[in-house]
Image (cartoon, rainbow over all chains, first blue to last red; front, side):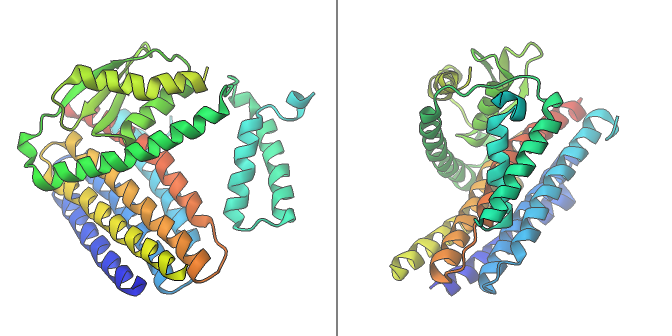
Length: 89
Length: 163
Length: 97
């Protein structure tokens, strides 16, 4: 039962990532692309955790945690760049 | 005396919890190392934390978290229904200004984060004088009722928790 | 007990995947940038959070391996999602005009 649900979840998350990728390419504004990129990273965290469950190992969770941290810092830095024109004052 | 060693007890406690979660084990060694790290970090960074936030009713936090989590679930069902069954052009999106009664920065941050994660609303900006939050609503018929709902449901509770 | 845990995990996985998909659909379907911002901040965060809770239950009850890392990831996501959304909205208002 869990194996079927895992296959389903991995498929659905991959479809969601494809949708995000479309917005990343099509998005009319820089903010749209940034939002798509942020969502893509959050979805990839879900994918990493799902793969950790499929292979029954916990070694991937550090990677997921690092992804979350770097995605947050990257989004904030890019927003700062859009707002101020530079990242570090 | 306690304040000299531990300028921010709540921050130190959070650091200990995060440290043990990060190590993924509850052995005494981890917790002792976590306590040492928490004390030194809070001591060396206390210059950057001038204000001293007091939490008044710890029991209210649990009630607030329960309301908050339940509203996240409700908000997601509502947004999912809007996204799946409504064409985007027929959504009545607009900006709403929510006047604030809370004054401390911590309470405003908590309220703004709550607004972003709950039903169909997204906090966009805080007014320059810190007296109101500008909120973007996905689909709203009655803006006044929405503002009253936010004030009654979240702000009143927050006022009892944070001074 | 084990069967009950399996049902809970399956439910959480399906609900989580559904909400992740809804977040991405909102990102694609809605016409305005600020409307699009609603989907990822709410739906995707809840979807990923529910997948992480499923993972905690799966590792601790089914595989009987102690792990609580996922709690940290989901807490981090719930804390950072409003901040990113706030800054993205600000950047949108700033670059629009």
